[in-house]
Image 1 (cartoon, rainbow, N blue to C red):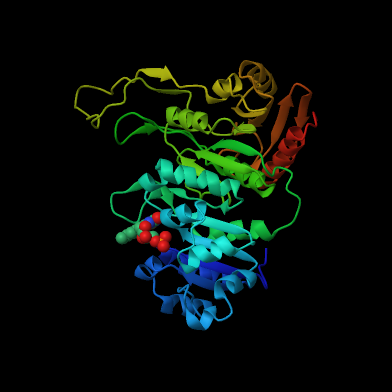
Image 2 (cartoon, rainbow, N blue to C red):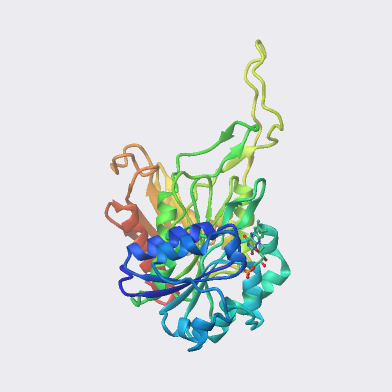
Amino acid sequence: MNLAGKRILLIISGGIAAYKSLDLIRRLRERGASARCVMTRAAHEFVTPLAVGALTADHVFSDLFDRQAEHDVGHIRLSREADLIVIAPASADLLGKMANGLADDLASAVLLATDKKVLAAPAMNPRMWQHPATRRNLETLRKDGIAFVGPARGEMAETGEAGEGRMAEPLEIVAAIERIFDDTPRPLAGKTIVVTSGPTHEPIDPVRYIANRSSGKQGHAIAAALAALGADVRLVSGPVAIPDPAGVTTVRVETAREMRDAVLDLLPVDAGIFVAAVADWRTENSADEKIKKVAGNGPPSLQMVENPDILATVGHHDQRPRLVIGFAAETADLEKNATSKLERKGADMIVANDVSHDSGVGPGGVMGGDRNRVRIVSKAGIDEWPEMTKGEVAARLADLVAARLAGDPA
Ligand SMILES: Cc1cc2nc3c(=O)[nH]c(=O)nc-3n(C[C@H](O)[C@H](O)[C@H](O)COP(=O)(O)O)c2cc1C
């Protein structure tokens, strides 16, 4: 979407991620939006007003008691002259002030005096993000109608720190801004959906693991398609080499057990779509040290045990979502296997795809490729969809989810 003519008031608060706001300004201007910036005092420690002003081609505002700007009550004017207020990065401190209605500097005064939509991109150390005070503030701000993008999980700028709290990337923030301005109908608005995607890795020792050929392309495309219809999507992804979809909160995991725990943590949700190719088995005890090849000893024997069945766990859970959809990658007896899976796993629908080499879907086959041919198996019967791209399968499935959650039994 083009942001031509949109006036963004960007509030930069004091966090390491402030350097990414410089890129955000560029991205907004590339799309035809104007960006005017308010910086907190602390933000000056991380990026200079000179750099921000050069990129916005506008005055940078920091001082609530600026005589020049305040002769006509500048903090009110800044809000009046904006179509949207974006806070990136949003510090724990600024979120706390907003949640409590404080207004002791220009940024917080603008935020208290505005009637415009506000989008915040929090960025902070994972312990600050998890702190009960931050959780309380977020809940209050959500109730107040503040929209959020991110934070993501991953490495922090500080060495040795990792977890949830990293600011969303500038392009994800742009995508969130575009969604706010986009007024096409959003049939999944207000619905929370968990999607799993990718393979799982089951360790044998610290360097070896058992995996499968899932690329995550289908699951990620479904997450993006649901988000495009307005759903609040939580994607639980195994290790994949593709980027996190924009507009989706992604939780990264490695093993089947981690995936199950992450999914259960996210309940309750309105729908669950289990696309991940979860390993059926793992080794009973993965070795803590690399298993050495010793001449004459032969290969080690691996004792396998069954992994948790995430689809069945959720399908029979006390907090079962209203709609549960599983994927069945089969190489033989596709329909028979999918129909029996439907019952055993407590699913409403199974999307069955033939992943055998001679499935005719190509190039690259279904696993890892860009195309898919699926059959939708439900109590109502079997609906065969023609071969199409994974993006098209995702869009059609998202429409089906929207219809089901709206009460249409089709
Ligand atoms: C090196 C350094 C990095 C910091 N990074 C963050 C951060 O990423 N997120 C955050 O909420 N606070 C961070 N802080 C703390 C804030 O800068 C501090 O709470 C400040 O008062 C925030 O002010 P503001 O909300 O007015 O911008 C950091 C502090 C330092 C010294």
